[in-house]
Length: 309
Ligand SMILES: [Zn+2]
Image (cartoon, rainbow, N blue to C red; front, side, top):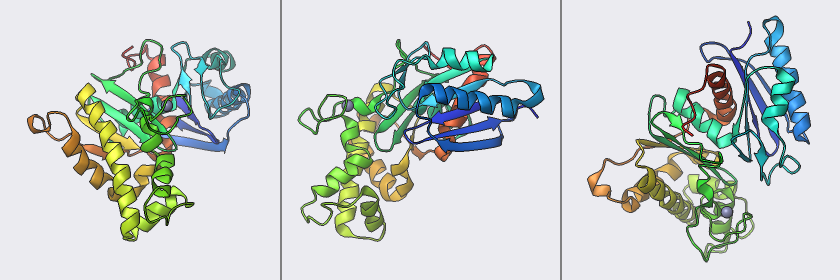
């Protein structure tokens, strides 16, 4: 059967694509090494769309890309995707498939999936923050994605939380993602007074903390404090119903999320006058971006109400 939509997520190392039937069930999946150029990525997606579409024709195709994407679907400033910058992905993909397309930032697409079919299903006002190597995010307001005037909304990771902090690749100092990320975890571990984690990876600290190592737990608590600080700022700005957290760090589960929730209760503005904002683990895992991209493509084909502007 012809899929109702196809979605893909293009990250730093891989391209993951899914086909959805009318109920939103995944009927096909492909994972390949990330194409070297944007043109190759378009060709890969075009081939998949023709193959999975079969006799029924090419379905709508959505893609979430790990970079800024402007409102026209042109890729901007993706440090993890060298050579993709300035490429008019939406125009080239539409030429290749002949049908509706949606091109979005990967975290924006993942947020949409979590709000449509994941942890924040049915919640009108939700924030999504993905804590990986860096931070991705998006705000959903009144049931629609906040896109921003340029399409660049939701870059929560570059909120400056310490102007004297470490230098960020974006050029600023002390961006939230310098602290509340996998690289931040390794940085904090290296600075721990015990000196035990000077050259270990963040994953090793997480494993040690899970085994009850007191020094490692201290590092994870420090990480949790930075995560809660930024979420508290976002809660002050957006007053959301829930905050969904995803990305590699959240695989630590309650080891990380319990201290995040505790600290958030301490740092949230007007905490005594509002219900505690639930911090929910994302439900869709590594497929979230591809699923969201497919759902956005379907929305475009139906006339489009997902984007708030
Ligand atoms: Zn930055």
